[in-house]
Image (cartoon, rainbow, N blue to C red; front, top):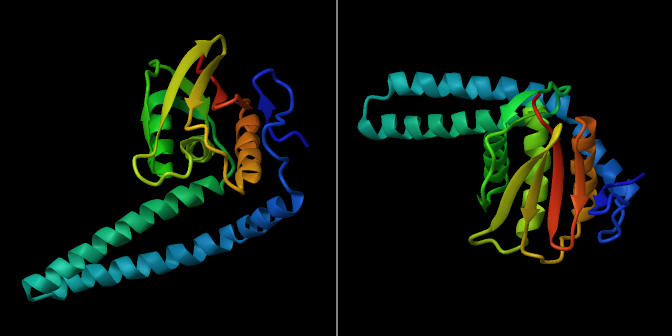
Length: 209
Protein backbone atom coordinates (compact mmCIF):
# COMPACT_ATOMS: atom_id res chain seq x y z
CA UNK A 1 0.00 0.00 0.00
CA UNK A 2 1.38 3.40 -1.01
CA UNK A 3 0.48 5.90 1.73
CA UNK A 4 1.34 9.06 -0.17
CA UNK A 5 3.90 10.44 -2.61
CA UNK A 6 6.90 12.76 -2.63
CA UNK A 7 7.25 15.82 -4.84
CA UNK A 8 8.37 13.66 -7.79
CA UNK A 9 5.30 11.43 -7.66
CA UNK A 10 7.19 8.47 -6.18
CA UNK A 11 6.24 6.74 -2.91
CA UNK A 12 7.29 9.02 -0.05
CA UNK A 13 10.36 7.85 1.87
CA UNK A 14 10.60 10.88 4.18
CA UNK A 15 8.03 9.40 6.55
CA UNK A 16 7.63 5.88 7.89
CA UNK A 17 5.00 3.66 6.31
CA UNK A 18 1.70 3.44 8.15
CA UNK A 19 1.40 0.53 10.53
CA UNK A 20 -1.44 -1.86 9.53
CA UNK A 21 -2.06 -2.58 13.21
CA UNK A 22 -2.45 1.12 14.05
CA UNK A 23 -4.70 1.67 11.06
CA UNK A 24 -6.87 -1.25 12.15
CA UNK A 25 -7.03 0.22 15.65
CA UNK A 26 -8.32 3.47 14.16
CA UNK A 27 -10.76 1.51 11.99
CA UNK A 28 -12.01 -0.28 15.11
CA UNK A 29 -12.76 3.08 16.68
CA UNK A 30 -14.47 4.21 13.49
CA UNK A 31 -16.68 1.12 13.44
CA UNK A 32 -18.23 2.31 16.71
CA UNK A 33 -19.29 5.65 15.23
CA UNK A 34 -22.74 4.83 13.73
CA UNK A 35 -24.22 3.51 16.99
CA UNK A 36 -22.34 6.17 18.99
CA UNK A 37 -23.85 8.93 16.87
CA UNK A 38 -27.33 7.49 17.33
CA UNK A 39 -26.94 7.35 21.11
CA UNK A 40 -25.42 10.83 21.41
CA UNK A 41 -28.07 12.41 19.19
CA UNK A 42 -30.79 11.09 21.50
CA UNK A 43 -29.02 12.31 24.64
CA UNK A 44 -28.29 15.76 23.18
CA UNK A 45 -31.92 16.21 22.26
CA UNK A 46 -32.97 15.34 25.82
CA UNK A 47 -30.47 17.79 27.32
CA UNK A 48 -31.52 20.59 24.98
CA UNK A 49 -35.18 20.08 25.90
CA UNK A 50 -34.33 20.08 29.62
CA UNK A 51 -32.37 23.33 29.29
CA UNK A 52 -35.24 24.99 27.41
CA UNK A 53 -37.56 23.96 30.23
CA UNK A 54 -35.16 25.36 32.84
CA UNK A 55 -35.03 28.67 30.97
CA UNK A 56 -38.81 28.87 31.15
CA UNK A 57 -38.95 27.92 34.84
CA UNK A 58 -36.01 30.04 36.00
CA UNK A 59 -37.33 32.86 38.17
CA UNK A 60 -34.00 34.55 38.93
CA UNK A 61 -31.44 36.27 36.75
CA UNK A 62 -28.72 33.84 37.89
CA UNK A 63 -30.85 30.81 36.97
CA UNK A 64 -31.65 32.20 33.54
CA UNK A 65 -27.98 33.09 32.97
CA UNK A 66 -26.84 29.58 33.94
CA UNK A 67 -29.43 28.00 31.66
CA UNK A 68 -28.36 30.26 28.79
CA UNK A 69 -24.70 29.33 29.30
CA UNK A 70 -25.56 25.63 29.36
CA UNK A 71 -27.68 26.04 26.23
CA UNK A 72 -24.83 27.71 24.35
CA UNK A 73 -22.45 24.90 25.33
CA UNK A 74 -24.92 22.25 24.17
CA UNK A 75 -25.37 24.01 20.82
CA UNK A 76 -21.60 24.01 20.32
CA UNK A 77 -21.51 20.31 21.20
CA UNK A 78 -24.29 19.70 18.72
CA UNK A 79 -22.32 21.45 15.95
CA UNK A 80 -19.26 19.30 16.70
CA UNK A 81 -21.43 16.19 16.71
CA UNK A 82 -23.00 17.06 13.36
CA UNK A 83 -19.58 17.60 11.78
CA UNK A 84 -18.40 14.22 13.06
CA UNK A 85 -21.54 12.43 11.90
CA UNK A 86 -21.21 13.98 8.43
CA UNK A 87 -17.74 12.45 8.17
CA UNK A 88 -19.16 8.97 8.76
CA UNK A 89 -21.59 9.21 5.84
CA UNK A 90 -20.76 8.37 2.20
CA UNK A 91 -19.00 11.36 0.63
CA UNK A 92 -21.09 13.61 -1.58
CA UNK A 93 -19.01 15.86 -3.78
CA UNK A 94 -20.09 19.37 -4.60
CA UNK A 95 -18.60 22.79 -5.42
CA UNK A 96 -16.87 24.44 -2.46
CA UNK A 97 -14.97 27.75 -2.40
CA UNK A 98 -11.31 26.95 -1.79
CA UNK A 99 -10.92 29.74 0.77
CA UNK A 100 -13.85 28.47 2.82
CA UNK A 101 -12.47 24.92 2.75
CA UNK A 102 -9.04 26.03 3.97
CA UNK A 103 -10.59 28.25 6.65
CA UNK A 104 -12.77 25.40 7.94
CA UNK A 105 -9.82 23.00 8.07
CA UNK A 106 -7.61 25.55 9.83
CA UNK A 107 -10.30 26.23 12.41
CA UNK A 108 -10.69 22.52 13.08
CA UNK A 109 -6.92 22.12 13.47
CA UNK A 110 -6.70 25.21 15.69
CA UNK A 111 -4.07 27.00 13.61
CA UNK A 112 -3.76 30.23 11.62
CA UNK A 113 -2.92 30.41 7.94
CA UNK A 114 -1.36 33.13 5.83
CA UNK A 115 -0.82 33.39 2.10
CA UNK A 116 -2.76 34.23 -1.05
CA UNK A 117 -5.50 31.93 -2.30
CA UNK A 118 -7.16 32.24 -5.73
CA UNK A 119 -10.92 32.63 -6.04
CA UNK A 120 -11.36 29.02 -7.09
CA UNK A 121 -14.00 26.39 -6.35
CA UNK A 122 -13.09 22.73 -5.86
CA UNK A 123 -15.34 19.71 -6.36
CA UNK A 124 -15.07 17.78 -3.09
CA UNK A 125 -16.99 16.35 -0.17
CA UNK A 126 -16.80 19.16 2.38
CA UNK A 127 -16.73 17.00 5.53
CA UNK A 128 -14.08 14.56 4.29
CA UNK A 129 -11.83 17.24 2.79
CA UNK A 130 -12.09 19.47 5.86
CA UNK A 131 -10.89 16.56 7.97
CA UNK A 132 -8.10 15.55 5.55
CA UNK A 133 -6.78 19.12 5.23
CA UNK A 134 -7.02 19.64 8.99
CA UNK A 135 -4.77 16.60 9.48
CA UNK A 136 -2.13 17.97 7.11
CA UNK A 137 -2.34 21.51 8.48
CA UNK A 138 -1.96 20.23 12.03
CA UNK A 139 1.11 18.16 11.14
CA UNK A 140 2.65 21.02 9.17
CA UNK A 141 2.21 23.45 12.08
CA UNK A 142 4.41 21.35 14.34
CA UNK A 143 4.18 20.84 18.08
CA UNK A 144 4.41 24.48 19.23
CA UNK A 145 1.11 25.17 20.96
CA UNK A 146 1.11 28.98 20.90
CA UNK A 147 0.85 30.94 17.68
CA UNK A 148 0.71 27.89 15.42
CA UNK A 149 0.55 29.04 11.81
CA UNK A 150 1.46 27.83 8.34
CA UNK A 151 1.69 29.40 4.91
CA UNK A 152 -0.99 28.20 2.49
CA UNK A 153 -0.96 29.15 -1.19
CA UNK A 154 -2.66 27.66 -4.23
CA UNK A 155 -2.58 27.76 -8.01
CA UNK A 156 -4.78 26.38 -10.77
CA UNK A 157 -3.32 23.54 -12.80
CA UNK A 158 -5.77 22.64 -15.54
CA UNK A 159 -8.47 20.45 -14.04
CA UNK A 160 -6.93 20.70 -10.57
CA UNK A 161 -6.09 23.23 -7.89
CA UNK A 162 -2.73 22.61 -6.20
CA UNK A 163 -2.56 23.75 -2.58
CA UNK A 164 0.91 24.18 -1.06
CA UNK A 165 1.30 24.13 2.70
CA UNK A 166 4.66 25.25 4.10
CA UNK A 167 5.10 24.30 7.72
CA UNK A 168 7.69 24.68 10.45
CA UNK A 169 9.94 21.87 9.22
CA UNK A 170 9.82 20.21 12.65
CA UNK A 171 9.92 16.40 12.79
CA UNK A 172 6.41 15.00 12.55
CA UNK A 173 4.81 13.34 15.55
CA UNK A 174 4.70 9.61 16.22
CA UNK A 175 1.25 9.19 14.65
CA UNK A 176 2.14 11.07 11.45
CA UNK A 177 2.46 7.98 9.23
CA UNK A 178 -1.06 6.78 9.99
CA UNK A 179 -2.56 10.29 9.83
CA UNK A 180 -0.94 10.97 6.45
CA UNK A 181 -2.18 7.62 5.17
CA UNK A 182 -5.73 8.50 6.19
CA UNK A 183 -5.52 11.98 4.67
CA UNK A 184 -4.10 10.50 1.46
CA UNK A 185 -6.93 7.95 1.34
CA UNK A 186 -9.58 10.66 1.71
CA UNK A 187 -7.96 12.74 -1.03
CA UNK A 188 -7.50 9.86 -3.48
CA UNK A 189 -11.11 8.80 -2.98
CA UNK A 190 -12.13 12.17 -4.42
CA UNK A 191 -9.57 12.30 -7.23
CA UNK A 192 -7.11 14.29 -5.18
CA UNK A 193 -3.53 13.60 -4.16
CA UNK A 194 -1.10 14.29 -1.33
CA UNK A 195 2.60 14.83 -1.92
CA UNK A 196 5.40 15.67 0.52
CA UNK A 197 8.32 18.02 -0.03
CA UNK A 198 11.30 18.66 2.26
CA UNK A 199 9.34 21.09 4.47
CA UNK A 200 6.00 21.32 2.73
CA UNK A 201 2.95 19.42 1.59
CA UNK A 202 1.30 19.67 -1.81
CA UNK A 203 -2.37 18.78 -2.12
CA UNK A 204 -4.06 18.40 -5.50
CA UNK A 205 -7.84 18.90 -5.49
CA UNK A 206 -10.27 18.54 -8.40
CA UNK A 207 -11.23 21.97 -9.70
CA UNK A 208 -14.84 22.82 -10.42
CA UNK A 209 -15.28 22.92 -14.18
